[in-house]
Amino acid sequence: MTKIRPLGARVLVEPVDAKEESKGGIIIPDSAKEKPQEGLVIAVGKKVDDDGKPVDFDVKVGDRVLMPKYGGTEVKIGDKEYQLVREEDLLGVIV
Image (cartoon, rainbow, N blue to C red; front, side):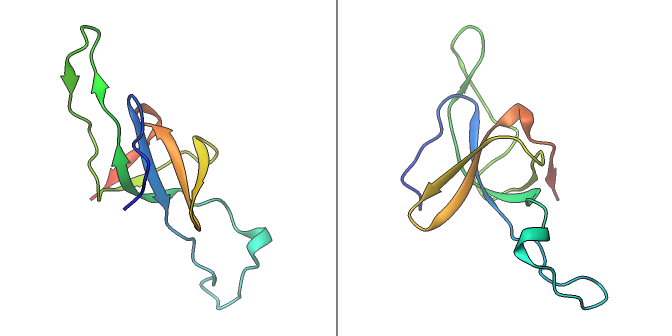
């Protein structure tokens, strides 16, 4: 488990690696890969409404989500890299 708890309506997401091989079997070098747009929710913050009352997140720990291509903040914890994004910036939940 991570040693970070997102603040506010932020979500900590572990990006899922892009496939390293194309459909035709061509191996794609790291420099040509796009940033991952899919990830796994690792932790969520505490979301509140305008009155300061707690509000449930639309995502939960363990959900697979679609992230904006260049959104959020990259965070490195130990040897793993994560994205810290606002819940409202997530594009969807993969079901």
